[in-house]
Amino acid sequence: MIGFSSFAHGHDGELLSGIHGGDGDPDAATAVLLHGAGNGSTRRLLPLLEEFVARGCRGLAFDFSGHGESTGRLAELSLKRRFEQAVAVIDARTPANGPLVLVGFSMSGQTVADLARHYRRRVVALGLCAPAVYAADAWPLPFGDGAGRFTEILRTPGSWRTAPALEVLRTYRGRAVLAVPGTDSVIPAEVTASVAAALAANASFTRLDLPRAEHRLGLWFRDHAEDRRRFVDVVLADGAQGPPFGSGRPGEAAPFDRRRHDPNDRP
Image 1: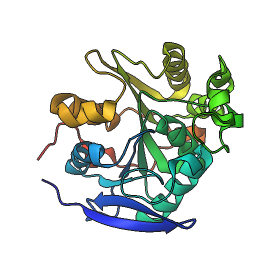
Image 2: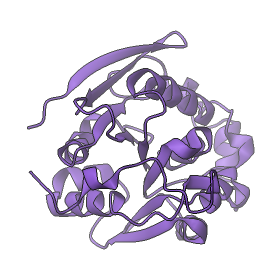
Image 3: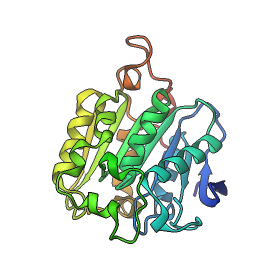
């Protein structure tokens, strides 16, 4: 088993618990894994993080406040605070200006899009696993107890259609993988189709269907090593055309040495 170190990062009056590993090569991309909502936590993502580190990546994952071993109350969390917490941990635990591979589950599909917009050229690959996207009005609101404004917006039919995250994904030009479970009782099929269409616009895009899986793909990858390896294979596959978001000179390669992450070069 690959060795990981734990950490506690102080942010906004809370302690965010996380793990990191594979820190030997300062030039390697950092795979940042972000869990979903509800009872999601970093613990179930450890085998997937190990897989990325085994391919030469640095690895980083943490529990959002109110989750896992982090402090705070889930009802006080919001999409905005999730983004701010992720930025705080990434800035503290990754090399400055180093390349990032962002992987998000369910609600963290939104957070991955927020981070892609924030870090721009640093983001060389996205892995979206049964992702959700949200209306702009929902972004700053606390999740609450299930009866507040956040929930009201979520339950408004079609509120997600104007989600700013879709435009972020539409303009992204790096490597992108959408993992889709065969049965998803959480994310509507229309949301998944819209995310796929957005990624197909400009990214080097792969849709990875997992017919026997259900929504909680973190648990699925934990328990199914073959699919876990296949997912990492396609996320790290060479195929991006030009820099993310089209910044820089035409045809300029994204700042990511993919030779370090040959999917056929396993230990």
